[in-house]
Length: 217
Ligand SMILES: [Zn+2]
Image (cartoon, rainbow, N blue to C red; front, side):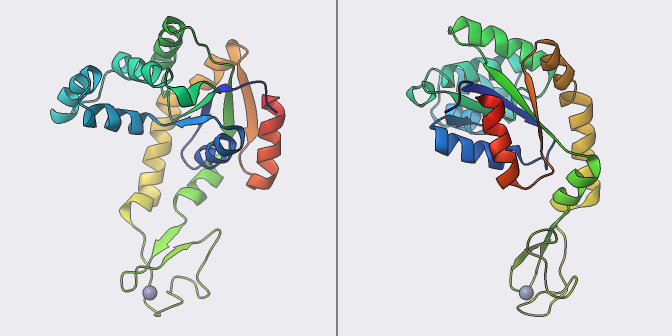
């Protein structure tokens, strides 16, 4: 069993925190919370918060941090969070982390811990650019886990494989740059609050999962 149950998962895109969050939440009956899902649900249900958020989305702007923090806090009051939760992808900035702490205090909750998934830039880039697709038969390959038999060529139909712009080196570098500027400062932030545990994200998940359980116990 684990003793830390109200959690934030922190890490760069490609670090694999989403996959481990999914496994942990299933096994320990925690709620896996992504802010994208919350935002879509609030807007769809036409709640007061949802209407406010919609006005920003419609005008092409970002939903303000305090509004997102309030939505997250509201979501954490739901029944499936009683046993604990993993916030995956929020907070993304130090400002959001401050607002989250205040929003949690208002509903009588607090975080038990923050797990940081650490990986080198080299590994992250490799993972973010690993996907290749076939235009002709839509087969999907992953150069790390499910590579084609012949480099760059579809196993099924022999067509040359291509990389979607979302999976390109340029996009990967952009995403990591934004992460380094905006989100990486949360590592020293939570370290200073003595809340941070670090997991080496470069190892396969059958190694990192037991490590995760250990830091949460
Ligand atoms: Zn093909």
